[in-house]
Length: 431
Ligand SMILES: Cc1ncc(COP(=O)(O)O)c(C=O)c1O
Image (cartoon, rainbow, N blue to C red):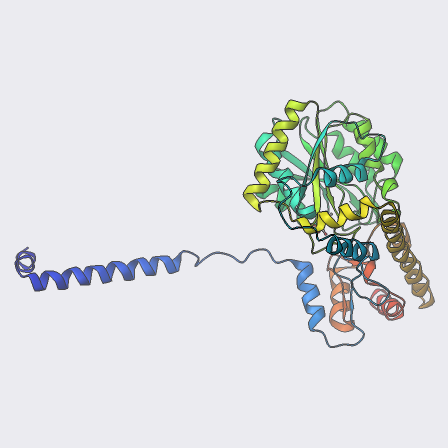
């Protein structure tokens, strides 16, 4: 007390004390702020990208990357579709500007996207669509919108297994997630009876996610009849069906045939939300173009959903990027270009299918007596091999063949130049 009054009476001491106090507060605040992020755990690693990065650093001339789910040509190179190159030339020649079209993508783009999904017969079904950032962005803004608006059970059932980001996207958007049985690991096929049992017990008013075709990671798709059964079992129970169409075209090579499950659900009167992506079927991976559609019952409902989708997108990333939608529009505007694109999709599918057959033949030639029949039965880009983690690690560490450790291999990475080595090593780690 005596000391304080002594300081207060002496202006110089008062100044010094004030300066010291400021320094102490400054240091304390600084110390505090350096603690803010101290115990933040690492974000979950992207396992596939990690494997891909390791592949890039590997000097083995025989190395093979089968980790990334992206199409590669017969020399293992990323493939730019000729129809896309032509569309890009058109965009330059026409000197199209880069102004924002609107917040939800151009009307033509959205019409084209809807028609690609549902075909010609269901065009009059009420819906709202918005362009978004590829499949991921489309799923995300749909998830946000469902989380905000949906009056039912905010619980989505996801196939087990599924694309690694399905569950986190829905969870981070505020939905609860659970899994339904999807794959029979022992027999390497769809767990049809397990799935049907789980679907029978879904709570009414909940949400279910399906991958429409080329299921990632298993390649196991229901047959048309099994889709009909699924539709039947979900009928009249007010279950919202969410369809991820990321691999349209890679199931059969025919974009329209691949869309059968979606069309069937709509025809049967289900409430459906679907997310589209041009990453895979137009090879526009890093261009990020796609969109999401909500089938609706009336205009009023549609208006709110559309506004909500727009709001989610504007808060997340603003307007959708225009370059990709211009490419898609150019391709669909010109019948010849569209025809070329459809043939390119067929060609990609054909190369993948033929590589499945070549790999199977080479495995047999190497003397493998293991049952590889699932290699031929699975659809789309992936071979869900059934290899153990140890066998996958052996492929990576001893043979420089980079696969996902759940046994998933991207068939896109197999070509005439590496299939002998792959078959030899695959047999070696499995015999
Ligand atoms: C099943 C599935 N859905 C969606 C996506 C998202 O892809 P994109 O955002 O490139 O369209 C992927 C990517 O691999 C996927 O496998």
